Image 1: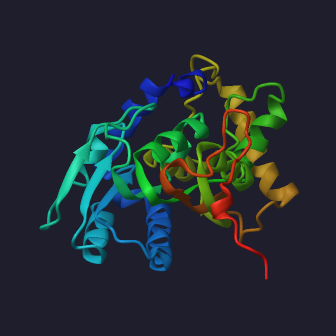
Image 2: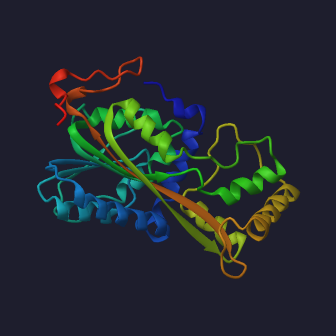
Length: 300
């Protein structure tokens, strides 16, 4: 599988920065922890036996402990492209835990290894979602579940519109993430069945542009586009962007906020999808699905 994500993102820069933010990540990742808790609550509907679990995207020893408490019989693996992020999940309990190597095109595990792949905001690191979900499908056992949260297209819309106001022909400032329907389509194309998707908006507010960008940088939110404009942003251009941020707040009122605080919208997309039995009902190369007659039930 080729690493198509490199055509969109500078993955070397992304990995370096992800390692750099690891030291303070637990302290600053407030929204990520909120979504993590939501994902944990949604696990209650799963009725499968958990023997092997993969946490795809590190950054929280808490999630390791929580999964170990729920599934004490399970072996838990953690993988991330950044070694320093994986180190945050190092076992501090009696959990059976292992660290798994991964790149942007391969998870270093055999096919059919895991009952559950749990992923919180790791998918946005990929320029090609289809590439990721195919690899997740490969490492899941038949009837295994992919349980995840990612970002939707309204995430960071205030920043995107502010840049579009001054550079309408430059799309390489703020990524527009895939919506939940496109994510669902990618899951089905990879062979998953019964994807269930929903989304929930969150609004982060800041007292100043400095506090906004300090928080975004601390959380690893930066411009990773390979085609981004090289060099530093000029003073006049940066000021025009900041003026645009205030205009988005004051004129468009995308997300009304109290007083003069600056809003940043984050659209969380939650999903569950299942790997069907041993490739049954998986779309072929032409996109068609062939269902054996034995799978059809006579209508009442």
